[in-house]
Amino acid sequence: MPLVLATDAQKAERDCVTHAAWGSPLTVEQFHQREVRLRAHPWCREGMRTWLLVDDGGQVLASCETFRTDSHLRGPDGVATPGVSEAIASVFTEPALRGHGHATRLMDQVAEHVAQEGQDRHAALLFSDVGAPLYRRSGYREAPAWDWNLPAVGGLSTHAVDALLCDGDVPEVMGRQRRPDVPFLLWPSPAQVDWHLERERVYAELLRRPRPEACGAMVGRSFALWAMMARYGELVVLLFDAESLEDSMALMEAARGVAHRAGLSRVVVWEEPGTLPWLARIPGASRVAREGSLPMLRPLRDGLPPAERVTFSRALWV
Image (tube, rainbow, N blue to C red; front, side, top):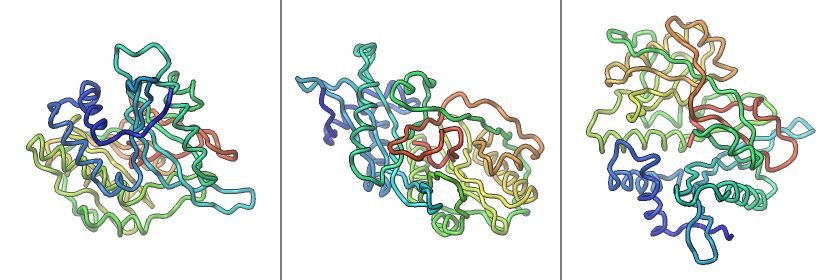
């Protein structure tokens, strides 16, 4: 069963098919508009591909998307070498075609194809909403996944932060971010963060609702970047880099106030080793096991640490 790249017409057809899984509350036409907008974003134009597993007659059996993601792997000499990892999303098999292993075959072939594209290919990653067993068959292993939820609160001011951030501030703020010294690092780019903001812009337009007044905040050298998930009424923190508990509390207070004024119910922060000490001490923050978006990793070369030792920021999600 061959693996092929989708044409624009085939992508439009898959939009109609996959709407049932990911389209609500948008109509089929609105969902297609969303997909066209996102595929036109610079980050997608540079590194997104739509893959189809087809039978000998050309019928599509399963589909998925891959997104180029920057990564760094530390070698035996201690030097971190830049490379490429592929984030896989939107794995879909139509109900009538399920139960025949098409999704597993698709995942295997995509990973094998990517691995053969160059020595700098590090890993394939995904965020599963259907648990781990399906993707374990294709060599993926999961990492622990916890969220910290903070209720949106009215009356909170932003006086404790130095500035609220707008979309145009993202590249400069991320340029000051400290890169952790770890064996393997998945590193989102400013363009990838703006892709999340483009999703926010699309939903705000299609659902006719206002965007939050800011996409982040900074205090000193600490910052947080976030985006509205209009489907769920949440403000999700994409990146959170804080130097102290005081900075963390100021940033989260700003996020909670911005979320409330945007009509959202809560702020959601993905737990990471660097943020856990601060989040655990913020009043009102509650830790819950994540229900979806389970991070999973498949190494494409030797030398990668196990998935549970890799940090997955929310900005990496696709």
